[in-house]
Length: 136
Image 1 (cartoon, rainbow, N blue to C red):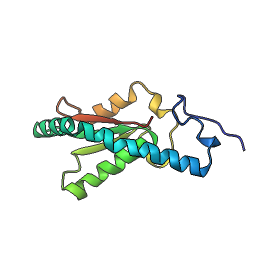
Image 2: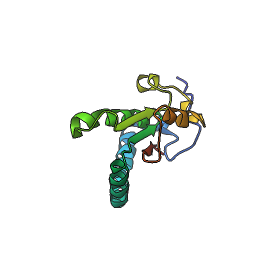
Image 3: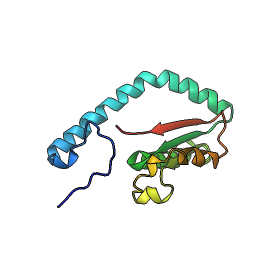
Image 4: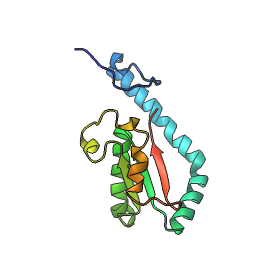
């Protein structure tokens, strides 16, 4: 079976296809451990920004590609039932649009203009918060 790499950029995990299941699980678990500590350090700044902008009528946008984008869309869709906020308050956008939620749209993240165009469809303003979700 041949493997064609579609990710353009090398990362700490460029050779996943050569690893055993045990090595993959360990690598994923080790990466997962770094996230909560990184977020914890930024919690005061995040809280100040979010409270300030939402009081000004801003919305929260999650933007990402691939799995990161899918997770942003899922999280945004769960905010209304979980926190009782309007559906228009937290919005998830994924590179490649609605199609990319269920099927990979390769190279959609390479556009230098599509993300801005997607935000303009929502009449983005200076009160809105845009969070780019990415995995290295």
